[in-house]
Image (cartoon, rainbow, N blue to C red):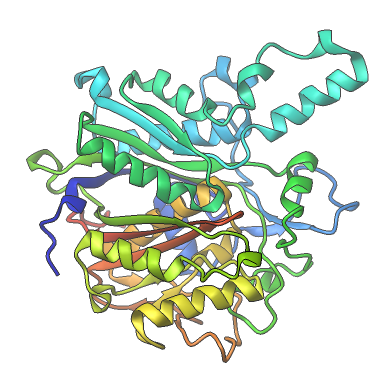
Amino acid sequence: MNTSTAGAAAVITGMGVIAPTGIGSEEHWQAVLNGKTGIGPITRFDPSGYPVRLAGEVADFTAKGRVPARLVPQTDRWTHLALAAADAAVADSAVDPASLPEYEMAVVTASSSGGTDFGQHEMERLYQNGPSWVGAYQSIAWFYAATTGQVSIRHGMRGPCGVVCTEQAGGLDAIGQARRLLRDQSRLVVTGGTDSSLCPYGLVAQMANGHLSTAEEAGRAYLPFDVEAGGYVPGEGGAILVAERSGPATEGRGYGRVLGYAAGFDQSARTGRRPVLAGTIRRALDDARCAPDDIDVVFADAAADPDLDLVEAEALAEVFGTHAVPVTAPKTLTGRLYGGGAALDVATALLALRDGVIPHTVGTTRVRADCPLDLVLDVPRERALRTALVVARGYGGFTSAMVLGRGDRPAPAL
C-alpha cells in the first residue's frame, strides 16, 4: 500500500459527536465498545398512532447553554445539534479560526431532511391560525443549507460552503467534497453532518420508503444481515469533523487521513442493471492506492432490509472474498441517522483505528447463510488496524465508499 497519495491530503484533526450513544466522541465510543444502545421508545411525540415506535434519540441534549440563545428560536433542532458538534470539533482540533484567513476556511455538511420539526410547527400555525402566525424564520430554518450557513457565520468561515443532500450517503459525500476543497484553496473545512427528523411529519416522510422497523423490542429492532432482519430504526444526531490540509501543522493532531473516496448511483431495480456498490468500493480503493487485502475493517451500511443486505454482502464478498475482512455495524446502537449517519461512522472508524479495536455489531445473532461475512459479533475484537473502509447508501440509489488511514493522535488518558 502506498500511503503517500493525493488522498492523504485531508487529515481529520477535530471531532464533535452528538448521538443517541452519547454527547462527545469519547462518551459515544465507550457506549459503542460496551454495546450500550441509544435506541428506545420515541419520546419526542406520542407515537401510538404510528407503526414505528422506536428511535435513536439524543435524550440528554438541550440547546440552552450549547447554542447561542438568539439562534435557538430561529433554527431547527438538527441545526442545534450541528452547532454544538461543530463547537466541539473546532475546540478538539485546537485551531483558532480567528487566526486563519477567513476565505481559506470552508463548511460542507450533509442533510437529508432539513428542518422538519421547525417546519411542522410553522405549518400547524398556518392551518390553525392563518399566514400571519407563520414566523419569518420559517424561510430559512427548514432549508437544507441552514446548518452550513449558521456554522460558517458562527466561526467566521467565508470560503466555499455547501450542503450535500444524498440521504445516508451524505456524510461521506460531504467529507469527499471537503477533501477536494483542501486540495485547492481551502486550508480547513468543517464537514460531516447531523439530522433530526423525529416528529410526526418527519417520521411519516421516512416511512414512505418501506424500510423502517416496526419492532417494539429495542434489542431486536435493528438486525442487519440477520435472518430476522425487518428494517432499520430511525435516529437523530451525527458528527461534525474538522478536516485540514496535511502538513507539519497537523502532525500529532490527526485522528486519521481520508485516503480514498468514490460515489456511484443505482438506478431503479426495474432497469435490471447490476448494483454499483462493488464498483464504488473498488474505485475508492483505487483512489487510495490500496489493494483489497490492505483493508483491515469494513464499517457496513447495514440497511437491515433483506434485499439491500444481500446486495451489500455480495459486493463485499466480490471485492474482498468471503469472510475475508472483519465487518461491523455499530449503527445498530443509534439507528440510521440519515445525513448524520455516515459522518458518525467515519468518527467511529477513526476511533477504532486509534485504539486498535473493532466494535461489535449489537443485535444481530444469526447471520444469513447467503451473507458470507466475517461480521464481528458478541464482543469487540482487538486488532492492529491501519485502514478502514466505510460504506454508505442513501435512499433512491446514492452509494458512497471511503477509505480511512490511521492517524498519529494518541488516545486521551482515562
